[in-house]
Image (cartoon, rainbow, N blue to C red):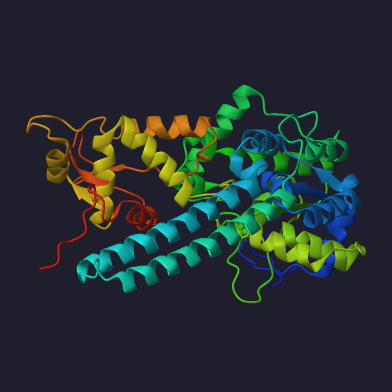
Length: 450
């Protein structure tokens, strides 16, 4: 019997030869991809040019100009940029923020006036001229201080705001981006391919396969699939070019990034590194926008103001979900929404406020009592007016479209077919805001002290 020949030699496997390896990128890796790879920007990097002040905007454009030959924009990024550019929180970022702070200052004034009025009534000092005069003087001083702050904020917002953004032909950001990115934007996916990619995104999200699965928790499926569409376009371009990729993002999202803790450097999730390597034969690196400016200064010699780096870090790197511009409810947006809902659908408004008073939940019996419904009436479609108002306000630019749905149906047994609603819940983040708006009002009466 012939003897078996020697086994073929296997390549020596090292400690990092594992899909789950958390290899920390070196400065040489970033220098290599910045000078010879493909630098990809997400929509928030482009949109942050509107939100930045003049100095930060200038530094960002200078760095992007230095990297112009390396830049590439997936078509999905372009689509998201145009969809989100029209939001007040983008083109009018500085004025919107000034308005929000102004509303908060008004709340401080009204809260102080109401609290003092209740105190005077509770301790029976309404006829004490000396006390009431001191309170009036103090409130007048407070009002003057708050008015001074409002003037300061509005003046600064006027300085930081960009003129000419109302028309695309006069928008200075669009002019800069067009010159910078012309010929560097990818093609859209064909409709039949995009449909298949969106279906694949949904399947991956069910198994929490990155990227983009977080978006499916609170966005419509078509919009939530955007991150995966971008990822597919990015891998295809990397494969066609045969080069490594540096993805620059305006925010940190856990379905893109490995956990960032303490001094651990930024890096993409290992699943994404492995998929980019297996499907495109390319390496994947990631930086936030502020980190890109730092690396450009460190490795490319580009002069960057440290204040710009700090400003970008504060602007959009708080770890929120993908393309969630101004994610969540603000005092201003919630007030606008509740005012409109209260005018058109007072029953749903009462239920939302009752849920806030009940630590975020209102049961079925309370809903029937508040609405005056007969016992046999179904609650099917009860939340539909809430969605109607939200969509209309989004089309008017009052909402971003990324706020959590305001009134969700709760079931005792969600798996049962045609299960009746057990009650309704509201996003926890809105409870303190609703308390500020309604506590002490007829919708949310303050408890009567014995």
